[in-house]
Each structure stands twice: as C-alpha cells, then as structure tokens.
Length: 411
Image (tube, rainbow, N blue to C red; front, top):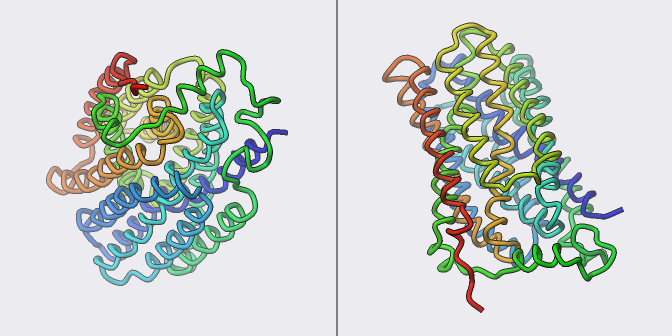
C-alpha cells in the first residue's frame, strides 16, 4: 500500500478544519452578531477582509518555509492560531473586537490551506496528482456540513463563547495528531517512490512528466511569464466571487430560510462541493487544468445568475447547490494549475505570491459585497456583477495558461 494515500487521508482531516472552521463558519458568527446586536454588515465585513489579507501576506513566507523545511510544523502552528481565532470570536463584545480575531484566524488559515496541502500532495504524486489533490480535500465538504450546523446550534443553546471553545478543541484535536504522527515529508522518507512506483526508474511517459515537474524556477523567472499573471489575476477574480458568497450566504438567505434553515442550505452547498470533488477525482485527468478552470468559472457564473434572478426557496437552493458544486473544484485547481506550469521543487515560492493575490481577491469580495448591499439595499445586483466577472475570468485563464505562454527554463 502506497503511504501517499495515507497522507491524502490525513490531509482530509486538515481540510475538515480548514474549511469547516476557518471559512464556512465565518458567516455563522457574523450572522449572530447582526441578529443579536444589530451591528452593520459593512463594518463586520472588515473582519473577513483582514482575514484574507493576513492569510495572503502570510502565504509568501509560509511557501518558502515549506519548500525548505516541510509542512509538519506549519500545520501545528496553524492549528494553534485557528483555535485562538475561534475563541477570540467567542469573546467579541464590540464590533471592532472581530478584527483581531479574524487576523488570528487568517494567519492560521494560511498555514493549513492550499499552500501546505498542495505542497504535501505534489511531493507524493506526479501522474496521480489531480486525483490525489481532489481526494485530499473531501474533508472540506464534511467540515462545512457538520461544523456549520453544530456551531449554529451551540450558539443558540449555550452562547457564542462556548461555540468558539468547541471549535478550537476540535481543531487542535484533529490537526495535532495528524501533523505529529501521519504526515511525512515525502515518499523517500518511507523508502518509496512517487506515485507508488515499484522501482525508482519510471517508464518513458512518466519520465517526461517528472522531468517537466522538476524544473527549478526563481520568482524573477516566474514574473516574466503570462501564466503567472494569468493565474494570479483570474484566480483572484474567482475568489472575489467565492469569498463574497461564502461570507454573505447566511445573511442573504436568512430572510427566506431563518438562521437554522440557512445553516442547512450551507450544508447543502458544502456537500455539493464534495460531489464536485468526487467527480473531478474520477475524470480530472481527462482534460488539462486550464480547461477545468475555465469550465468551473463558467458554471459558477451561472449559479450567480440563478441567485440574482431566483426568488423562490427552490431556486435559491439550486443556485447555492450549483455554486457548491464548483466551489471545491476551483480551490483544488489553484495548486494543481500552478504545479502544472511551475512544477514541484519551486511550488511553495511560486504559489506563495499567487496565493497572496487569491486571498486579496477573497478579501475584497466580502467588503465590496457589504458596501454594495448597504448602498443598493439588496444582493441581486451584487450576484449579477460577480457572475459577469467569472465569465471574464473563464476566458482569461484559458488563454493565459496556453502552452505557448509557458516560458521554458534555459539549460
């Protein structure tokens, strides 16, 4: 049995926390503050902005550190920071108290998100990388499906501080053992070869893939490629849209479904993310990453059009489900697309700046959505604008990742 698949299973425990605690539950906390205290959505949106900005800037040194030292210490630090962030959210008494809590949460999130998970998977897999990356993030869907309703229930029954403490305990209880006892730095540590090959000498086709994957890039060289800027800008657009909906979904749906009902729609969204990941795991190798990215952007644009025009509970549920179907695949494709162009040895140092642009897009989304909602009085115009942006990103990423735009490293 190839140990890399045990590592993939362990990554699911990390993903369970990464998305279930640090992403999907943001809306639960913010919805509680709005309904309980009557605080402004625009002001509270500053917290998620800080979350993503701090995660983005933290991603640059984290990427370099993981390339040099491996992921285990980074995972442990991330668990402590995320746990501290949820407890801090439970201690909020004024609107501005949410800001330092989201800073802690964002720094921890960067340590356990796609920089770390992507580096882990790219070290263990070359030919099976798409399947392994999709399989490594199944836990994200379960995290949202289980932890969002759990958090909403605890808040209503025992208060927001109890909810924050429970989430912190779950975070440390899962990531700590995974980092200490399961995650390894690469197949050579356990005497195996990438992809579980029986011998160190791959076949001819596999050898070509490994040769492409082992190119060394500097940041200066990457900055001179169209692909780098295309990945950075188009994924930033995609995450601007995704961050907006994930933060505002509970607030948007609450007038129709109520708090508990909205939490269950979030559950549907996250479970559809799991369906999307399963589908990508099964057929992801059939098409190049740029084709998948363009397709997922286009489908997510359609989901926003449904959310913008739908008025019934059915259409809002369908729009949220369609959004969820693409949500997880787009996140999986971010490290995969980067590795497809720049390879494994330089993955951390190249993906770090791309990740920063992704997080800046995620930061701007909730803030702009909050401002537009206050100024226009509804979410429909916001969803329509985001859908148009995703269509632009779909065309842009397909063009930017064309093989003719990849700059080959000279011998």
